[in-house]
Image (cartoon, rainbow, N blue to C red; front, side):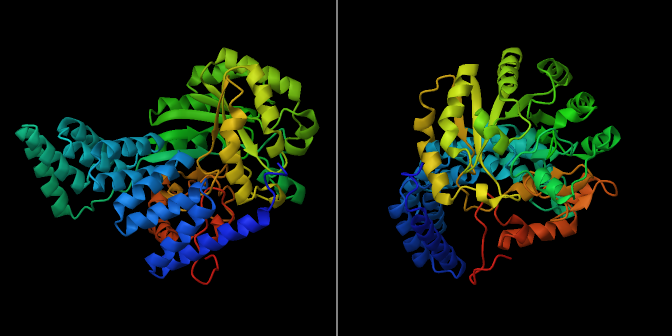
Length: 500
């Protein structure tokens, strides 16, 4: 790693200069200056996705569509799991008349976030331009399911049914549209939107003391409280949640320590609100046989946290882990639940150099998907990777993983922080063990930001409250201080450079 990270401070300073200058230029409306700065960033760092994303977005904003296409194409190659980049590429391709390419980009965006009505609209539009009215109608129907009083969707539904010679369907849609118009309903999604994902923290107990974990930090300070969420509280939460793509029945603690975990999974599944119900575990608290009851109850997926399998490193990263026992349990679990078990590895300055050794060990265990995400500063900033180290790692990961044929290795889409506005405050809430609702899974401490508590209000009342909507409107303008240091998105600053 030492040879590859030589000159880190110089490169980081250059990246920061380009990025800050470009963003400041955008904020004061000087598009030409912003383009110059972002172009300089792309020339200096041609394999940095963030630079291409910023330049492509700026070109798109000034309607230089043909120029934006190759830049955004490069951006999605470097940051393949950012739905907003695929959407921007789809718009650029649409505006240049490449409807087939545009459709492919919008479909990819929907694979990442299946409940985004903007991408469903975009895909319906491109299908219409290609004369594929039946397919376009199917996407509009999905929007109506998600947002029943969406006048734009109802209008499109009526027009498409007219093109398909279905006058009865068109007429009923127009009648419904008239009712919506008279009621003054807005064209945006109604007040209980479908969520992309949600974590419900069911326990704050854990059998490990992992480096950088909020629980480890607060335990050392003497401020951590160990408690389980009651089964009755969990049921109340599930009953008040809207339909959601993915439910994580875990938070900071180790979920398998909760005595009612299997029943919680069973109840969540019986609600028929979630496409997937999942947990993440350290696999040290329970024998492999225990997990059968979870899958029998309806568990969709099991993620095992594995940052290293090196006995010399394990006590620095995940104290309390028995490496040999962990390897045995991973092997037993993938044999028993093939295709339902994957690995999550947090990459920090402490283990980035040992990633090849970790992949070699995992490859010897069996076929696995390994998802890698950057270490987050929740109390141990020395472990965080620099921007240049993240760029180096994502650029080299394919070559590092190539020898290990049993593994599918992915870097998280936020391994290089995105310059786009984060959608988590609209799509991905977090509920703490005490019932506090926070804007996203990174804000796990309600002392930093709580939108409300389910002990006194339903989830829908909290998530759609005027105070929550105001917080989101302010969030669009600039990043709040609670987002400082987030590894997923670049914090948006005002021209003075101070984070609000």
